[in-house]
Image 1 (spheres, rainbow, N blue to C red):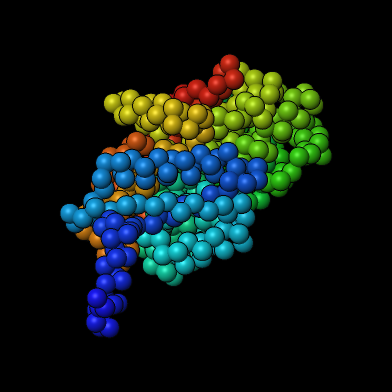
Image 2 (spheres, rainbow, N blue to C red):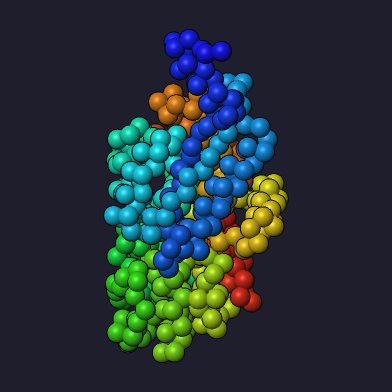
Length: 380
């Protein structure tokens, strides 16, 4: 029997729905460098987001009483601003409902303009440059403390807790590294402990030879070196410092504070020599939840958690919770719910200020002992 011509389109549509299942598909994008020197940090972030999506799907995630299938679209931005912009447009074209990323401040800023223009919320689990959340974008949110807090706190810590008096500051000229170094200097000066910035040096995020910089530094007889940049440069820099006999305290932000740093620095890591901070942290009753997450991450991926996976996990959970609160995955409808969310995550209590920055953001101070990262204290 032939179907009437006017029923054919309807029949085809019903067959398509049957073939695809009744679940609504909601795409969440994530963009990180999974190639290049920071690939281990980028993959760590991607894994955290993927674990959240898998958890939500396994629990039968619903929006407004309807089953929803979440799909993670993961892209490699290479840590490059131009590539990051191309990736952002690709995610917009794929009609993602929200984005977790980017890892680096230098890619996050240009990408944020594209997401803002498309009306898509973006939560970075790691980018710390203050300018990201000061562009007037209602789509921009951050799950970690910004450089103003991290850098200035580290500066004061160097002077008041470590007793630094002759300080050298180096940065890699990226948006992240330069911004962190400038805030660190402000913190040193604000501490009023008699410390002096005896040398200000610059390198790049791809440099491997620091002999010229380090020779100048050695002549200044510093008692502490601060580096604004990532672990891929910090590790070799530590090795070359040791070779030149510059075995003083070494500080950095969360780009340095990874599980891979001992491998990158080798025996130049020393004991209690490197002091670094991660822009986040939990204490007290929340520590068990964080420890359980780390153990589950290790079991799932057969990898050591680096730094940002739990923040990416929470970023996905915040997006999903906002969708449920709004009873919609339409960015126009659920984005306002992100701004007023109150969520207790793996990384602590999550709520945002008017700019999209994390309220009451914590930071955790670490050192390295026996080749392992060891928590010293959580500061707010």
